[in-house]
Length: 551
RNA sequence: GGCUCCAUGGUCAAGCGGUCAAGACACCGCCCUUUCACGGCGGUAACCCGGGUUCGAUUCCCGGUGGAGUCACCA
Image (cartoon, rainbow, N blue to C red; front, top):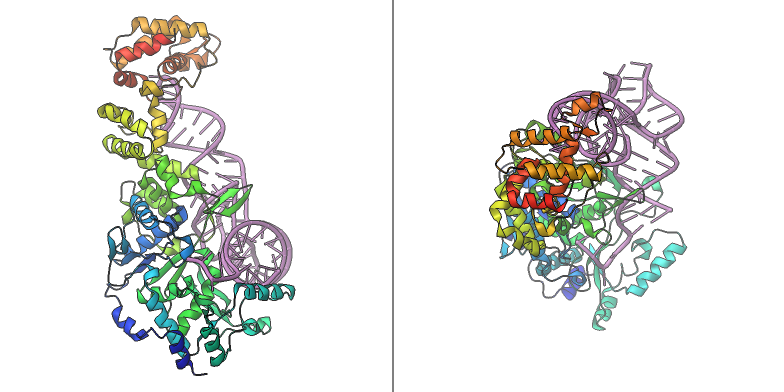
């Protein structure tokens, strides 16, 4: 078989040679040790936490080493394109603070290694495919879907491994004439790799390959033996081939991807070898798991829409909190570092792949929430109010207008109890914050909690009546509290909790119960910041009104 | 089913041949406090099983078991 002749027959329009691309995309001129990473999403419009998790590693590795972090759109699957998906991806990542140095952007492409949309790189891939055909390392395959299904069924009934390889590779050795005849009949074809891998031998004779994974250390597995499709009938490459060509030509040094890619690693290794290139350092990250029916399960795009990035946006999680959470599950020593450096910037943490976990991490909302509290408590009220307003604008327009009417009122509210050395950590995410402070707004004020058990209706009324009678909005905090004590004593509640604890039989309760009654009358709930401070913000009129309503 | 990865408390996770097996979240208790929080202190709770190697295995090796992933002209 004259391979050159076949190559020209198959790809007459390809005139460039691989060497041309090597010079168009030369080695990058970067400082020693600089890492080049990439994010390669397929534009289905759906990004979830797992994508962000991986993207974070890419970003940290690149920027920590003064390297390059770029965005490449892997749109080789024409069936799964979604309009506006690229924009959605970029803006979503930007929201969480991830910026690309190169690649696809809102305003087109930036960088010398483009195009960065795989759909626009057809000629490049085909040039390398043509070269493989010239060398006899790849061949056209005309099998239809039905034929392929037939092969698989036969393999299944024979209990042989499924796939296109060895004797099952029907079109591996088609003659030039046969190929030409099929081409003349306009038959559709794909290009397959002619794998050099072994398969029909004893288990112990299987050739193994060892790849040093950046996270997992040495990985040993059987070499690839499948004649995988590298170019689809549409002339577009499969992921495998596009990955190898692009990451070589774009001079990627580290490929960070999920563990679901582990099984196809041998394919990629063979492809790199066949093309005569060295592969980048692979870092296979652990997958984000979810607990379901007592079992862990990989986060799934279809089943877990609540774990899409949009979920965190619409709930109003602060991007900084999500980053902080991701960092703590990404690097096991991050939490420790954070405790030692409470005010340091996240970027000053020395991120390493060695400290990454390689077993599946269960997504833990409790932990995220806890971290979020710590992050939000450090954000000044003015900034927090901007964040809240921005969230409301996008997700709760009716609340947005309400909040905007009195912005300084909002800031006072958000500042409550958050100053001093023991600030309250009441806030978790925007939606929750609004619910937490909703009693400041009449239209959202609800009475959710009831009086403490040891205070009966009658006493509650007496307490509130006395409170209203003696209420003076000008009282300072001490004066105000003295009055509460008097009311407590007058109704046989201990003025000090300790007195009550010493002699529980002498009292109906203690001054705390009295406070709780007032709190519930004013705020509708048993949990809130300091009552006196709230009253100062609420104003005299509204305070009295809420108390009166309960009489 | 083949191949691959993984295996320490409920969850995340230190550990890398000798430890009373860290820490964080959650939970419980106590303290502080006018209440609610915050904070402080303390507590419950773990090395999947079986063989080796070794003076000694959570740690190394082998075999089970369990969980996960993957076997497309999807990425």
